[in-house]
Image (cartoon, rainbow, N blue to C red):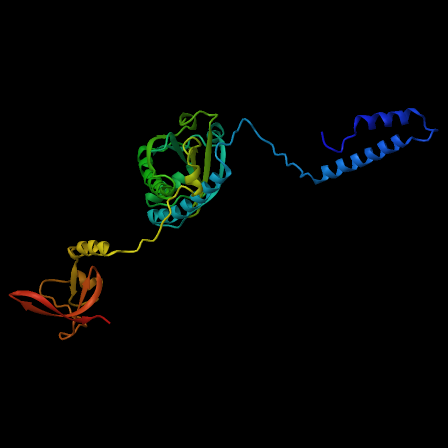
Length: 345
């Protein structure tokens, strides 16, 4: 009990004063007890006002969060980088502008994740060595058929999506797209854990792609991909058990500190010994000229191609494809040779 509470004697004095009636004057003990009671109530109210207000947040025991908010923030930043890098890689693959961005990331049960997928869909069960368990990659049909059409040289019309399973040829074409995505994911995850992602099998029915029990928690990552006039989603499912035990790595505390080492005489000599024996390619350009395509097709033996290069002008000597020196042609011991005259300004 606190020190501001009333003692047993004060309580008895207060009761006697109340029993004396309203017409009789209160005794000194009653007045003292009443004063102490008022002071005690005031102190209790002041103490209650000084205490911070507790914030009550709802908690769903059916969906236990196995990954901490700090880890989720690190995974979000990681896949934002993946989305940016994959956009450039996919643009080079399809020869068109591809934009990819992270749409959302959340912790849900695996049952909720597969319930939200289309059926049929383009699913790929992935192995993520050396992490335990399997991952799941889903490419929505509108995006999958748009990628296949682009790889075949066409351009799918927006809003037109087929509702069927991929054929064997279409699956092999889509594999080029997913392999490029897995390369970007593996490279980004190297800072956390060295991964070797590979496709284990293809599925079209989400109910058959059970990588974990439906009640287990997973990390659902949705990427929005815009391909020309078409757009679609790529959903990556990572079981929470796969990233368990990576608290320090995901937070960055487990990464080794990189220190800048100063070169020593031993390291200089070791590098010089390897560089001295390295082979380099030297290329001498005699002259350059431009002709038309029709003239190129009509070339025959004995034709002369004129250039703007003077006979007395120095030649260009390139080292590993980079022009470095000026030289003049000649002969040495019965072989063609060049004599370096100086550096190219």
